[in-house]
Structures are given as structure tokens and as C-alpha cells.
Length: 171
Ligand code: GTP
Ligand code: MG
Image (cartoon, rainbow, N blue to C red; front, top):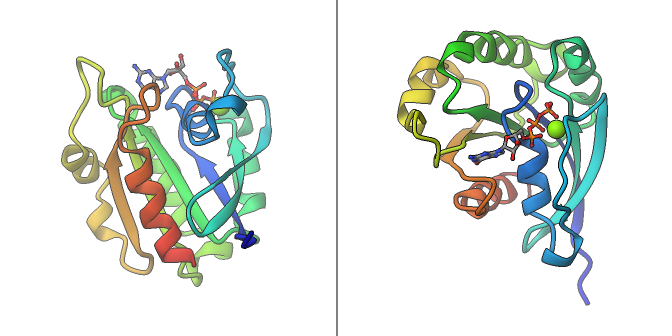
């Protein structure tokens, strides 16, 4: 068959936002696991879209590990930033981490696409993707293509839309 082009992406966002759950759901059914635990440091996960084979650096979102994120910016062709849309209280913390990412020297001059998942859309208190983008001031990102999708990592709703957008940006 045709070999898909490989690419590296970095998957970031605060702890408990659903990064690992999203990556698990993007794998083929028979490779998915049912026990997901908070990530320590990071893990590399693989999944594919129609055109690409993704090597995804699934970073821990815990405060003590967030300093690891930047080490993977240099070699990435894309970023997935996961937001817990029900965690209104920590939106400013997510915004702060996003600002650091956008301004990072290894990304600032690089036109890497940034895909946002406004995850946990099934949650009773979930904010809409429009509301999340307003709170995070995504319209101020001028030097990178970005896109936001509401998602439910448990059912997979919204994930394909996001990954298709990212694939189109990278390929
Ligand atoms: P760290 O590895 O600590 O950075 O967290 P993470 O971002 O990888 O989050 P993880 O995937 O471990 O998910 C955290 C919790 O949120 C788990 O209990 C998941 O089952 C739950 N979760 C993830 N996505 C969703 C979602 O879309 N809806 C709901 N209701 N729960 C979700
Ligand atoms: Mg994780």
C-alpha cells in the first residue's frame, strides 16, 4: 500500500483536559485501552489520518511537568492544545500556558498549525467553542493557522473534524 508521510505533533494543555483520552480514541479500535491514567512526563502515541502518520508527544499537563513541553516544539509540524471546556476556573491558567507557547522562540517564527479541542463538550458546565476562543483570545493569534473544535473524547465526537483540519495544514 501507499506509505503515509510521517509527522511529529506535540499535544499539550492543562492536566485533566483529556489529551491522553483523545489520542487513545484516535487509534484503531483494537489498539485502544480502557484504563487511562494521568500522564507522567510524556508518552509517544501513534495514529493516522487519511494522508499522514502522526507521532504524537502526549505531554503531561501537571504543573511540575509543563517545563517539558518546550523541548518538543523545535521538531514538531503541528500542535494540539486541549482545553477542558468545563474548567472555567482554570481558563486563565490555560491562557497563560498558551501565551508562553505562542511566544516561544522555537515556535514564534514557525508557521505551525495549532488545533484546539474544546473538550468535554458533554459536560453539564461546558463552555461552547466560541466562548473558549473568546476567553483564550484566539483571534489574537496572527502568525499561525489555528482552528477550534468542540470535542467529546469519550465518544470521539469532533475528533475527526479536528484531525482532518490538521492533516490538511501539514500535508
Ligand atoms: P494529564 O495526563 O494529567 O495531563 O491529563 P490528560 O489531559 O491526559 O487527561 P486524561 O486524558 O487523562 O483525562 C482526564 C479525565 O477526563 C479522565 O477521567 C477522562 O475520562 C476524562 N475525559 C476526557 N475527555 C473527556 C470528555 O470529552 N468528556 C468527559 N465527560 N470526560 C472526559
Ligand atoms: Mg495524559
